Image (cartoon, rainbow, N blue to C red):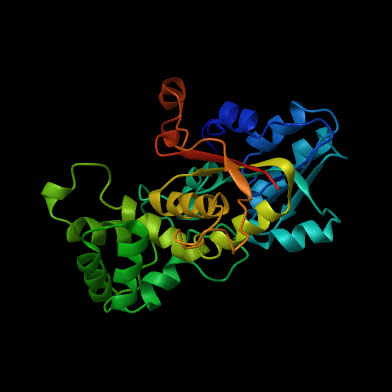
Length: 311
């Protein structure tokens, strides 16, 4: 059903979290449980709260729950609800927090989930949370031409966003767009052939629709700040991103939290009293090793950033 699963940058991430026995950790993107399982395996007594919007991931977590019944706590929720999740469990602070953002094998490998531009007659869906009533079909069939163009341009960074949006609007006048294959045909017809040489022509548009369907970028900056605020002094947060939009948000939030005094340099003393909250463990993002790239092509675009709470 699924291809072999590889947790992205497993060693780099687990090492970067500086694991502690009896520590408390939060994994905001459980997936197949690769990172969470390794944290539990490599520590004695450490507890992990792990969330995921995908019910498949939560159900798949039963194996880990049986192995670590008193240490592993899977929650079907959005990691952006971090504060309320921690509060409901009575946890005030964490030793480490991990986010492995983006689409996972749970979604990609099941064509019926409608995430893949390689699909044909599969329904255009793209929902992380299958209990949600809003899907990619609603976007392509109900958003205005202008809204579609903006989403595809902003979230997909697609230069032919206007042409794709125009052709979607024309096609849906005669038929509802309900399958991945229908949308791929429209996208391919919208992009000049000479610009279809580097990767699949539908990749960027599918990324854009997936981000919009699941609200992936909305509130990400606040969620990261909430999580850092809940770290113990010396605790670490690791975030893995898979495209420039996510990485830019993470980079900017970490940079802001790493900033001391912001007073006008002409002032003789600091009057703002601002102190940096985190130290950057890696100033440049960590990327996958050559060995991992050979074994798992999905790690190609991954970037890992790690910070440590200092106050």
